[in-house]
Image (cartoon, rainbow, N blue to C red; front, side):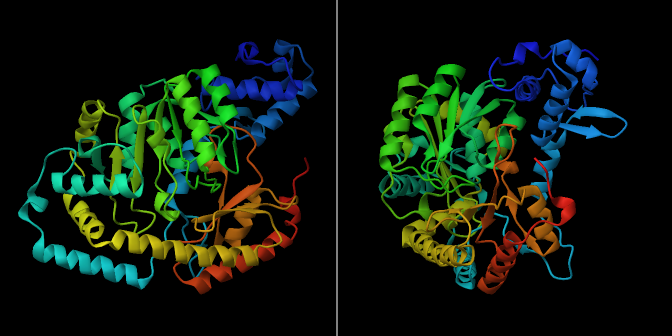
Length: 468
C-alpha cells in the first residue's frame, strides 16, 4: 500500500528517528490505524528518498517505541497493543506459583486489621442509626445536602479548595470525578495536556472519550512551567489535567513556588485546569492546590480511597462557579447520583475525625515502608516521597524494564514498568514503579524487596540481553 509520511517528517535530527516520529504522529492523527501493514523497506525508502538501511533503522526504532510489530514472513504492522496492555494491567497478575506473587505493582494503601475493624464498626452504626433518606434517596443528583455541606467545610478548611457547597458534587471515586470534569469541558477530538508520565486511568479515559492527550515534560517537582507554556502556545489545548501532589508513577510533588509558576502559565493562556488531588492526604497539611490559585478555571478532584480503605469510593468534585449545570447531566447519565450509603459513612468519619486519624496512620505506615525500601534498594537511584505509595527505581544499564518485569514474575514478584503511564509513544524510561502498600504483611513486602534487590544486581539471562 502507499503511505505518505512526508507531512509528518521533521527536518531536524537523524533521518531514521524522523521517520519513526512521523509514524508516531500519523498514528496519533488516525492516518495509520492498528492492523495496517507498512510498505516493504525498499518501497518506503524509494518514497522518502532515503536508503533502505535508514528505513530498516526507522522500523526497528518504531518497534522499540511500541508503534509497530515485525512479523517474520509477513512484514511490519501497526501495533494494536495499547488496549491489550491496558487490559492486562487492569486484570492484574494471576498467580503462576503455588503461592501468590508478592505484589509490588498496584497502587494500594496499607490496610492493617484496625482499618477493617473501624470500617465494620462504622457499618454497624449505620445499620442502627442511618435515616431512611440514606437508603431511599435518588436525588439531589449532586448528593445529599448534609453530606455535601460537611464535605464542603472540610475541603475548604483542610485542603484549601475554593468554593461553596453548591460547587461540590459527590462522585463514586476520583476516577468518576475526573470523567465528569473532563467530559464537561472537553469534546471529542479536543486536545488535553498532561504530564508526560501520568496516571494510566487518564490515558484510558482519553480513548474512551475520544480526546487527544499530549504529554508535557516533568522533573522532580512535577510539570515544568516553561515546557507547559511552550505546549500551550503550540497546541492551544482545551484543558490541562495535572497531578501536583505525588504524581503517579514518579511521586513528583510541586512546592508552592512551582505551583505559583504553573498557575501563572494556565491563567495567562486561559485554559481549563483539572486537578487530580487524590493523594493530598498522603502529605502533611500545608500544600495549597492549584485550584485555589485558579478558582474560576479549575476543577478539583480528590477522594478517600488512597488513605482509608479502597472500598470507600467517596470522591469529591469541586467545579468553577457557573459550571454545575454542565456537570449534573453527565452525573445523571453515568450513575444518577453517588451512592448515599458510602457517603454517609464518609460523613460520619469526617464528623468524628476518623478520616484525619486514618490519614495520619497511613502516612506513618508508608514512611516505615519507604525507609525499608530505601535501605534494601540503597545501591540504586530512587525517586519517592517520604509518605508516598511508590518508589520510582532507575534500572542498571544491563536491564530493560520489560525484561526485568518478566524475570521478576518468574521469581514471584509483580512490578510495574513505565509503559502504562506513558502519554507519548516514545522509548520508555529505564525505570520501574515499586508499590509499597498492596502487600499488607510487612514481612512479605521485605521479602519482595530483597528478591528485587538481588535481581537488580544480576545480569539478565543471555536471551534477554539487548544490543542497542
